[in-house]
Length: 328
Length: 283
Image 1: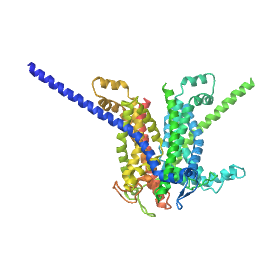
Image 2: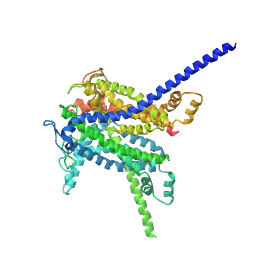
Image 3: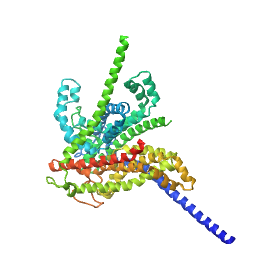
Image 4: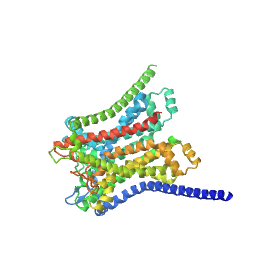
């Protein structure tokens, strides 16, 4: 009797031990798999950096630092410089941000302060849907609908308006092509608008009601509360959202490729066609013959990667600060 | 007294002007959406017919459809999701469950957020250097890998966020009845966060099904039907890009129709994804 029960418990202990060991093993496997996946995210970014550097090595070692300061881009003589694309990228993105920031903040104010409550969610979603539309759609719309509209109505008017004013007449000069730097900037502004709006709205929501109510309590108008309380309180977060939008605008490819005109030159007029880093790569990469040509295009990619990495890192750092503030 | 009144009125007037500007800003935002959708429907709908879904992309100047492009897009999107989702979910699980307070998680979260908004054309260049150059030719599988790299950050982000929302009391209850950690994660945490994780995957599908830039020099394009993953494959976005910039009217019409199909798919997916989590927010 006792021998039997002893046998049963000992075999039970053995199976229990085996089960516990199997559990521990599976847990270790699962934990390792999750950890490796997390590390893979880091490896991906490292891999992107390394592959861009090795791919662009030939061009960078041939042209050196002058790659950044040369305007000429000549596949025939194999002389490449990145100045025109860098200029185009920075100018179009900067104008886009200048247009999108006031509108984005305006929409955020509308959504948090003015909009009737039942409409908030639908309008918020509608603006965010703008972010979901693929960039090629903006491109085809910009090329066939928006650019002809600008060419026939807006641009001739603006050229006529500024033709006598020194300085501005250079900025808005030349034949109205429709496509060009300014058209790209406008399309980019529409594309980054939802990013800026949704982040601004989120950080506006972190403002403690007590702060706003005390301002209203001493008789401030909605605008004064926004200007003197909400915006100062959320400044860092708004800047983070703007930087995030800027990062998007700098790297945006397809929409710009359609409407910028792909001309490797720097002209003072915003109506003139130009090019950006991403548009150059998208247009020329598959047709690039010759190692040096391809390598120069990869070098452009490396420059874009470095610029956006810095901008996005700053953006995330700023948003991290507002997150910890909201959490505390 | 009169100056005080005028100050009050001035402030009220300024408030009225600024608030009107905010309403106008919101109007501009909504108007753009309406304008773009309106143009898409107007130009795209006239070309929408059964032939679009049953015929191959035509040579210049002839009528045809988009069947091979639609097929290619679906195949590469599915492979991209199948490859990217498990990695993303596992990485998000590590960040929210095993390593919630570890240094690695902070670093991965920062890098992941940067990958999330990194230019997709850079990913295309990366996969070109990684796969296309060593293999010596463009291929559908390279395109799918490029898409999966875009999927990972989206899924990592939503998985981590959703798992962080699961109350710790649920995990503790699981652990208290003796379940090992991975069983708790699988049967308690995943189950509680399921709708959120699915939303993340749907948003990832919505994102990659419209992506053009990473496919341009990985999967390239293909005028013909091809189900060979080791060969160039057509995709809807790249076909739209090629057709829209062509001088042929038939091609441009197909580009508009393709654009309408992509937009409806993407918007449908993101509205559906939002409706999955939206209900919970309202509660």
